Length: 212
Image 1 (spheres, rainbow, N blue to C red):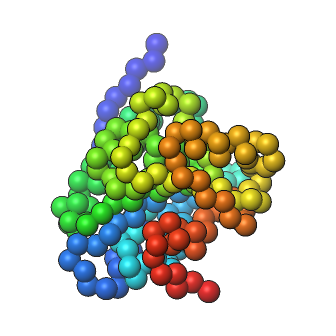
Image 2: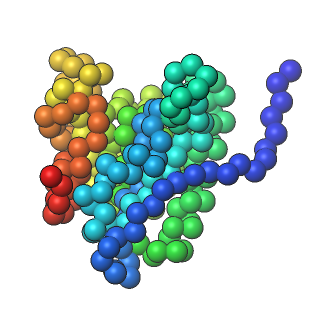
């Protein structure tokens, strides 16, 4: 018979403080995709780091990407003990958000979820949408466990998908984008693969882009 036990766990996140000394910075919380680590994922937002406080929490499950050694990645959950992992993710992300708000008193908070991280972002957002000012979901199917009729917001919601995304092509890509339109998201398409394009993020924010 299966049993469970709650205990303490140490979670990891990366943070990039804006170069400009603003007292109440605009914050971006970005959740990575499957098999990524935050120390690399946060680099995708370097072009925005002069204007925004960038925070990248890491999925709690780390594993070797190939075999039993070598490169390591992280994930947010699997199909095993799925409901418990979802609840644990929301719990620790809420604790992190409370700490960030106390430490930085942000003027606004944008929640961005990429690929697998988009599902976690959507579930977290649904728990308390008033905590966030903008939601960006990137290259992912909307979580089927969220009732679409309950996912409403007066805030700005965006969905992004690259035209060369290797996981969503042709009619599948069009159906995916249409599903987000039906949910009230503004859809952004760009020439790119299954990856974060910082220039597109900057365009959504209306922010200056300082990338190459």
